[in-house]
Image (cartoon, rainbow, N blue to C red; front, top):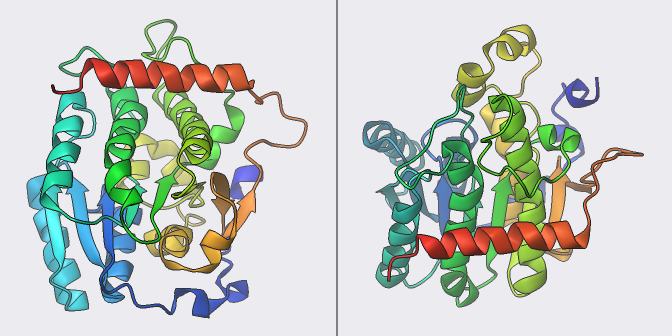
Length: 305
């Protein structure tokens, strides 16, 4: 019941002027920007005059989405970058090249997510959804931090999921080599890891505003493909991508968002707990630091020299 109770989109109680801001002169990178929440976010920010860097896997879908955004918003400052976040070395190469080419990045939105139905590995031998959802997000964020830090009012927003509430952080078996592979549970674990990563990065990089959020349960192609039964039974109560994107946009553009401390988890524009009441999902500071050091070591292994 817990995850479904936000069936009604609570637009009425939001402060609309929070979003009545111009984003001209600000640059936004959005991963997975060609559909769902990513595209809805890109569309709204482009309407506000922001420069958009769409980071997508599929060139045709990305170009089509870009054409839609430019046509609807009249904003031509929309750039497509082709990158598969599960290709670890390429994430490093992309981020390093981006820093050389562009002078500013104000906001990074880690939106792309991957749910696999069966275990598969990338060229580096890493489990693909871990490579994409966790290590790819870590490398992209870490590598772009110097560029974010020299840009005005820098922010990093990661789109997580309420599914992470049923997961306690794991620092072992990160590649899902042991036990039966359940893609949905692996994904939920990755979403927990994203929350811990956000909390830890916020402590280290205090001049960037970090946040992580649950968009509600949204009707996107990713959900339909990965969880067809859930999608079929819930489709009448799922949010639209625009509704799912609301808190992402609010975190990315509003002044109100940065009056809250960095490193928190949000739902419907509010900071919420990252654990259910009386939950067994709390992890120790040591476990959280272990996750970060494992990610750092893995990231370094594939860093181009």
